[in-house]
Image (cartoon, rainbow, N blue to C red):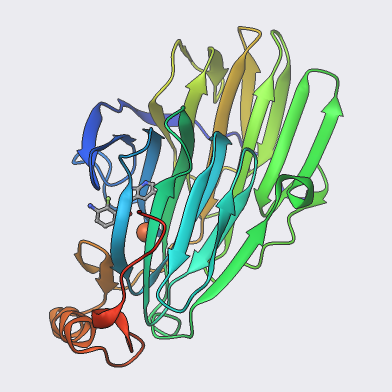
Length: 291
Ligand SMILES: Nc1ccc(F)c(C(=O)c2c[nH]c3ncc(Cl)cc23)c1F
Ligand SMILES: [Fe+3]
C-alpha cells in the first residue's frame, strides 16, 4: 500500500467579477492572470447570468467545455442542430475537437448560476469529431459517505463511486457539500494538477487556515500528494475539487481556439471563416435560441 501524503494549498486567489460574452458577468478562476498554466486546465468561469445576457454564437476548437449548472437553466444550440437545456444539477461535457459553433443562453431572467471548465485536449485529440456527453441530474453519479457529506462525482472517482463520463484528458471533478464539522479526504491521483474552487461557506483545506468565503481558487501542491483533506467550519460549505493529468504540450490559445502552434491557430481562423475542416456550414449559421 503506497504511503498516503496530504496535498497542501500553495496559492489562494480571490476571483473578481468580469464581463464576458454578451452582457454576461463571470467570476474567472483558472485563466485569470494569477491562475494560468494549470495544465490541462485552460479556464474555469463561475457564471451568474440573467437573460437577455449570455454567450451567443461562437466557435470552439481543440479543447472541451464542461458546463455544470448549480441553479437555473441554460439553453444551447450548435450549428449542426444539436440543441437542448441544461437544468439544475445537469452536466454537459462537450468535446469540441475539430470544431463546434454554438450559442449558450440563459432560459430566463432569473438567476442562472453554474461553472464552465475548459479542459485542453492533447494534439492527437484536437481534430477529433465533436462529441457530447450530456447527463441530467439523475444520471450524475452521487455518493454520501456519511450524513452531512454530499458528493456529486462529475468525473473520476470519489469514495468508490465513479462517474460514467469518459475523459479524453484524464480528469477528476467533484462537487462537494459539507455540514459543519464534517471532513472528507479526496484521493488525487499522483502528478495530477489539482485545485479547489469555493462556492459557499468556510472550511479548512489541506489542513491549513480556512477560506471564509466564496469565489476562491486554492491551488494544490504538486508534490506526490495522494489526497486532499477538507474540514467544514460552517453548515453550508460548498466547493468543487478538480484535478487533471498534465498534457505537457505547447499551448497556443486565441480566444476559443486552443492549438499547439501559431500556424494551427491561423488555420483555425481560416477554417472558421471559410467553413472547412469541421466548420462546414458555420458561416451561414445563426442560432435560433437567441430570439
Ligand atoms: N468571450 C468569449 C469567447 C469565447 C467563449 F467561448 C466564451 C464563452 O462562451 C464563455 C466564457 N465563459 C463562459 N461561461 C459559461 C458559458 Cl455557458 C460560456 C462561457 C466567451 F464568453
Ligand atoms: Fe461555448
